[in-house]
Image 1 (tube, one colour):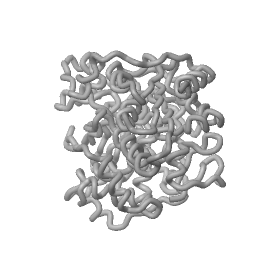
Image 2: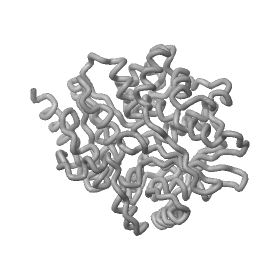
Image 3: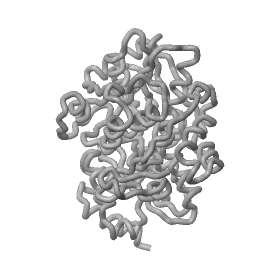
Image 4: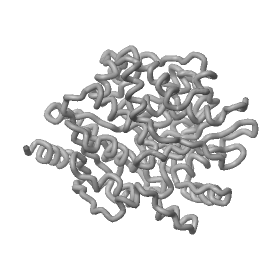
Amino acid sequence: MELFNLKHPQQKVNFQQALTQGLGKDRGLFFPTKVPTLSDIEELLTLPFVERSQQILGAWLAEEIGQTRVDSIVENAFNFELPLQAVTEQTFCLELFHGPTLAFKDFGARFMAQCLSQLNPNRKITILTATSGDTGAAVADAFYGLDNVQVVILYPKGRISELQEKMFCTLGGNIATVAIDGDFDQCQALVKLAFEDQELKQALSLNSANSINISRLLAQICYYFEGVALLNQGLEREIVISVPSGNFGNITAGLLGKAMGLPVERFVAATNINDTVPRYWNNGHWQVNATQATASNAMDVSDPSNWPRAQYLMEHYLSRQCLQAISVDEAATLNRLKTMHQQGYVSEPHAAVAAQALEQGLAPHQLGIFLGTAHPSKFKQSVEQSLAIELALPKELAAVVNKPLLSHNLAADYQELRHYLFDSLLSD
């Protein structure tokens, strides 16, 4: 598999290099020089999820690392269910939160961890990543206890839910967590500065587990095919998929799937009031505003890193009609959450944003899927307050709710972060 740097196309790498480097020169994102297309989609959709995923990811990786290794990585990474739940006769939620940390990030993080474990077993690396909520827990769980891997996770202090924080800030061991006094965009900017710091990058063998890492995106392609497979048995109606979008990695994976042959009419990029992409997509003007805190906190991103990949896909592989971009405000999010509850489905704010955007763009002859990206209990306080109900904690959250936080606090200052990384990781 060959990839190139979107900022410097002359820089080309293979998958294993992109996996371990994360970013290219000048923070450039790696993008495949060719998107493989899949044959006999109808037959592919009849396969079980793991077997189908092995074929999908084999189309990308088998030539470089061998199909046998692809099969092993997928089998080890994708070992939990992803059901499709009917909300109305026309709309369905693909629940991606049945993994170990109750969020869709488990797919990409576990796949990346398996890739690094099997392809670079003896190389010591440091994973430095930023999270707006669920990435932290998924990365921490996927890499916890792995030999030769140190993980450092930055997150915006006070801007993720208490239970999200508990999921990854109570582990210790090879997992270090840093609460940054700022928003997610500032956390992400600090990570990017670290990757430009050649002395630090070399000393710590830095890698990132954000969706800037191509391995994460490849893994996420697979569940879009599963959603269509679960919905499309005997049905001939057009399918629209709405994706709650913050850093735009998730929807980029869906667009990659469409470029491979996924039979979806269009995608809806559903954002909250941090609406940089919907404004740009609808009026052609890119303007990054200050990030605003919302109930759908994992989507509180104003400068999404993965947008250049999505835009490249739209310009070179897909048509503009394949993507709708819709912003949903807080009142509409709450109303949709209440409406779904009245319909018998308990959800959470991120999925409610996607469900509301889907409703706005769905024609009567179409069927719609929106992604459920996190378990409602991860947002227990806001969901209970909004719906006047009480949620039971699943065992994964009950196990950490009373554990103490082990995070270090830092200002949104790169020199402070740099000193922390050198002092804490190289002190031995």
